[in-house]
Image 1 (cartoon, one colour):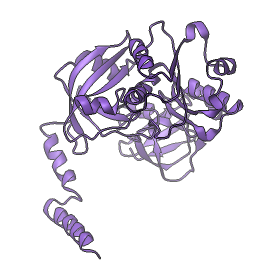
Image 2 (cartoon, rainbow, N blue to C red):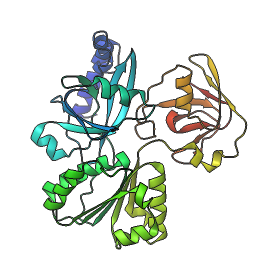
Image 3 (tube, one colour):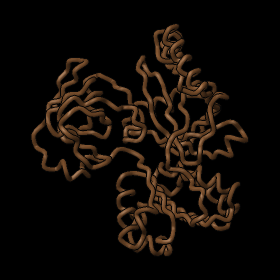
Length: 368
């Protein structure tokens, strides 16, 4: 054993002997949480500097993370943690500003759409103001601005534009000659960041931004794709937005010559269960048993296990609610579930599943 390994092992032994925990973080965290319930050793404090109204349904939070927070890569996201009426919630949002912006200002921006029935996004809009404090995670995610110099095609829908704003802000200072086409589908005559797109096109002469009002021009089609970006098979493509936009765009791209390996996507929002053919023939309800809380709930094919658990007032940890952040991971003891993200069935035995993208297909027992 090397000297370094010996020192590390001795440090672990000392921590266990002193605190009866595997790490000092595990020991100190519940102590601090007595005074600050939201505090976690692996998270960072962030102060709200400003809240900017982008549209009737969208606002941007300007945050200043603590000095310990490390810089993100354009396109990554963070988890934000809040306590609402004594209950802790975690949600996931893309960072809509660039790494260069953080270097210059020590601030990041989250651009957030208020969900129609969303408790957290509505609460944040009403209660978070300049001076408020929140807890955030480090930056995560592999849907990032590529380092290669290949031409890019970016296709965004609705609030799925946020990581692309970070992409383009960064390119405007690092690679102004990059050949980039952005197709932005939205249901508005005043799309997000309209003024900024004009500025970026002026700074980056090779940047082509096309704003598409779906109420007027409809959703993406092969004819539209060939007209707006004829050389799309030769481009590296990034898709971000709701499930329908991603699946339709991906199928069109592949059908008309693009390689699967050149297409990358990030889903904004859960996969509709109505879009899951495997569940269309499921007529019988399933019984879900939560062993720790000693509850049994009847499930149907329209409910994720996360929604079911929340309806039973169990409030398990969750974040993005679309299979990205893995915060809602839970141990399934038995039964079959269908994963709407991977479109696969589980085995019948014990395994870890993600509650937000799992639907009970048979009677299921969860360690929750």
